[in-house]
Amino acid sequence: MDIKIGTQLQLEPTYTDRIEKFSCKVVEQKDNIIYIDYPVNMMTKKTAFLMDGAEFRATFLAEESHSYVFNTEVIGRMASNIPMIMLHCPKPEEFIKIQRREYVRVETPVDVAVQFKEAKYQLVAQDISAGGLALTLRGAVDFKDNDEVKLTIVLPFANGDVKYVVTDARIARVFEKDHKKIATIQLTSTDDIDQQYIVRFCFERQLMNRRKETDLS
Image 1: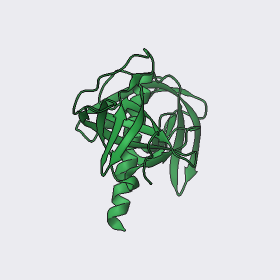
Image 2: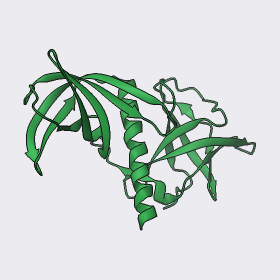
Image 3: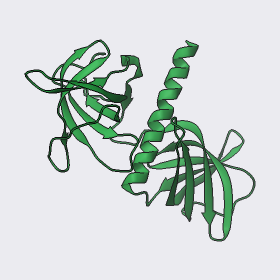
């Protein structure tokens, strides 16, 4: 699937604490390069000048009304009738389809510390999204359905960075599945920056899983 000329892209910086979004349009595409017009900051409505080497998460809406996301990087600029910025474009099989009405949930182990009243538990999540996670419980725990807890979620990124998301949460349900005790947890107080970290982490892990499946096929 190619990105067609005129497609609107939304760019979000991947390695920054700033919450920014930029809107731009695809002007031309050759091989693995997308040429875009100068993007506009969606909050300030001002033209943005992107630095070479800056990395972004790009989102676009395809003709079949599905949204897709991919990682990209600024690799240069071109002077033409329309000044253009050059972005790296991965192979179409590396595009990931996303569901806009719900958070992307990815199955991957994640270290999580749970504090409930005076008790603390070091556990591992079996999946995670920006809206919640599922914990595998080891041994007895004091919390139950609808209890309020505090989580510290450890997010190791592909570039070596490690982010710690500290957030309030609610135990949605504790149950047994395949002889394992599971707790599904809803995040209740993540701010925009922490939510962006989790979304970025899920996207990275989803892309890694996609590549592993491709290598095995």
